[in-house]
Image 1 (tube, one colour):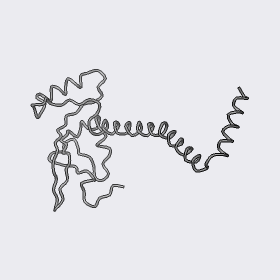
Image 2: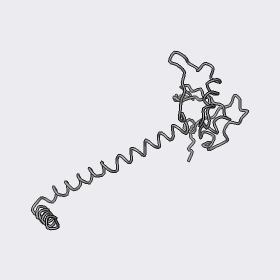
Image 3: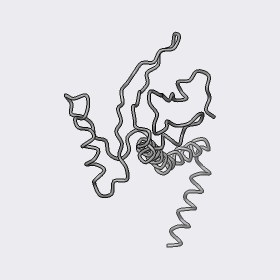
Image 4: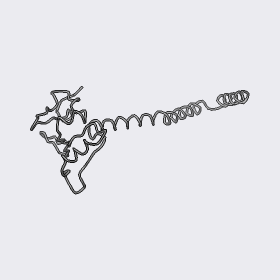
Length: 160
C-alpha cells in the first residue's frame, strides 16, 4: 500500500513538471473554490438562517402566530383566545398585537412601515422590544396615546 502511494506521488510530480504551470494553478484554485463551496457556504447559509429565525422569534412573531381567518380583519374574542393560549402547559407568555402596513410621509419623503399596536406590559415576557430602545425608554404599563419610532425612520439619526 505504501508503495502504491509512492507511485501516485511520483506520477503526480512528473505530471506537474511536464504540465503547464498556469493550468495546474487554475486547477488548484478551482478545487479550492469547490472545497469552499462544499464546506464554507452551507455553514454560512445555516448561520444566516439561524440568525434570521432568531430575530423573527424575538421581535416579530415569537414561536406561534394566531391570525384571523381570511375573511376577517380581527380575531373575534381575542381575550378568550389569549386566555386559552396562556392556559396551555409550557407557554411562557402570550400577547395581543395589531399590525398594519402604512405609508409615512414627512416633507417630500414617503416610507413604507409597519405600525404595531401592543400592550407594553405583555411585551416584556414575549419579545425583546423593551430591551432594544437606544434613546428614551420603552412604553410604560399605563402608556396611552404614545408612539415609538424606529431609528430607521428618524431623519439624521444613526443608532451606533
